[in-house]
Image 1: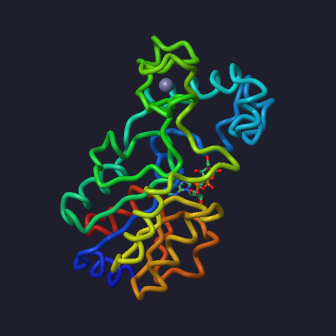
Image 2: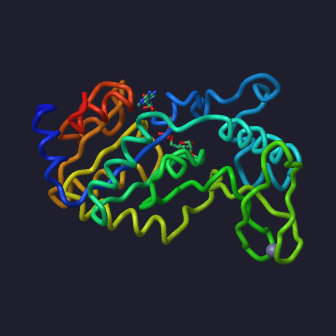
Image 3: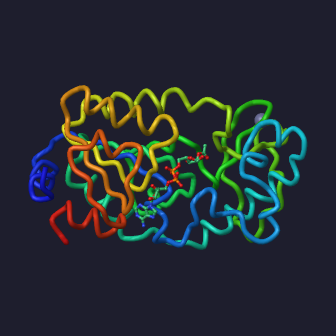
Length: 243
Ligand code: OAD
Ligand code: ZN
């Protein structure tokens, strides 16, 4: 399918579901998960920080790492790709759904509302005792670990770690949206990690059209009706008829 056809399909679709990954934030200067290991942290593998075992063993180190990432994303700004997706939502209204694997909060800051953050969020913490979720203080004023505003217990990063389940309601909502979508956009994700592959395939199986925006080929490319080989900002602008 040509770019022109993909653009026409996106324009006329009443139901659109979007999945984003680390690539959508690359133009905001946020390194992908694995690139993020610089300086002091290059001695650690992400798997050794982002897991329940790591947190049980050394909560202080794990919190230091997340506090640093929280500070970094707070200083970053949403880029044109985040803004274009927020604009697409305003155009489609209730027929729009955005699922992100990113924890940087940039979609929400760009104005996306019909949004689920499948892997959690760097700017909130969750109580280990009662489950309360609360925003972290300003990064400059934040010394981890935070305590629960309700029961005073220690809180953990509100992130889905390796070996943990995704939030069930968010995942169900995403699965439904991708199944019902006439067009699904898959932006800046390598598609190696569940549920990315699963969501794209839901749309395909139900007869919808699947379009990828990624400068490189991915695991999902063979299942796409159209692949736009460009960075997220330019690829989305081309698809939305502004390129
Ligand atoms: P990856 O780091 O696996 O993939 C990033 C993708 O973005 C690659 O396919 C790149 O080609 C693409 N990319 C790079 N720059 C881009 C740009 N400017 N515009 C568009 N695309 C670009 O990231 P994810 O697919 O998000 O999980 O990884 C999924 C999950 O794996 C992460 O959420 C994380 C990780 O393990 C958890 O933390 C639980
Ligand atoms: Zn609590």
